[in-house]
Image (cartoon, rainbow, N blue to C red; front, side):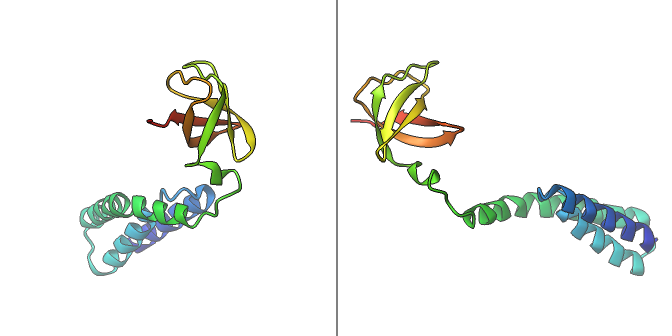
Length: 139
């Protein structure tokens, strides 16, 4: 029975290498645990239960932590540094119509969830393509 688990582990590892989304790595680990268990216990139902339960527990408990850690090691680019900065609205921003803001000496097309008047100070939340997502700073 161990050869079936070895095949599953190899298949899942290949899937993980092809996707690099940290989706099947948890089941590779749980498959390896089931493989080791198959060397000791011949009950397939118990092996399968260990595979599924351990995979789900590992996925739910560690994926978020690992993704945060991987993102924190991602170097920021020059564009990323304007996120969090304040900017001045140079063209009025309407709810469904982009406007323009000036930040760090550069003009950016800006979008917002509500109307923001020219001359207002805004906080840059994110960059989406060539537009910045902003919100008005409370006075």
